[in-house]
Length: 118
Image (cartoon, rainbow, N blue to C red; front, side, top):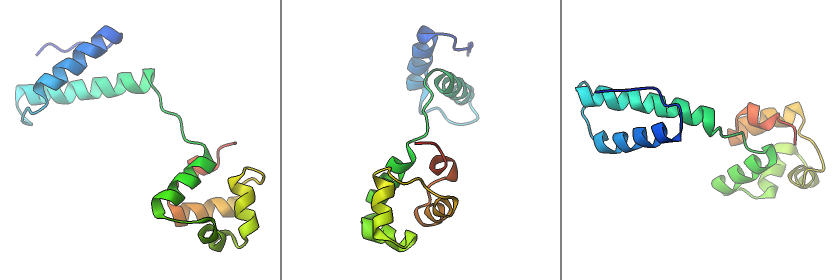
């Protein structure tokens, strides 16, 4: 087992190839330890070089509504008014703190997603 830091694309590709080769290694074995260390190194490299930003708050609401099979009228029960839902989903009205709390509780969308500017 010869592990080195992942500093560039070539190192990254080599690490991915090696992980592919030892993917089924048993935990506690030398290859299993190598697999675990490589996975940590790859995760670190990907987080630094390919960061994934948070989704747009309104798109997150729409996506979650779709996942849950909800319609605008269902969300109106959360906010109280159907017209307010339309204004929010079309980005004509900003989310209030109370709305963020209700969306977090009802749709289970993280508050850090909902409080972003849009």
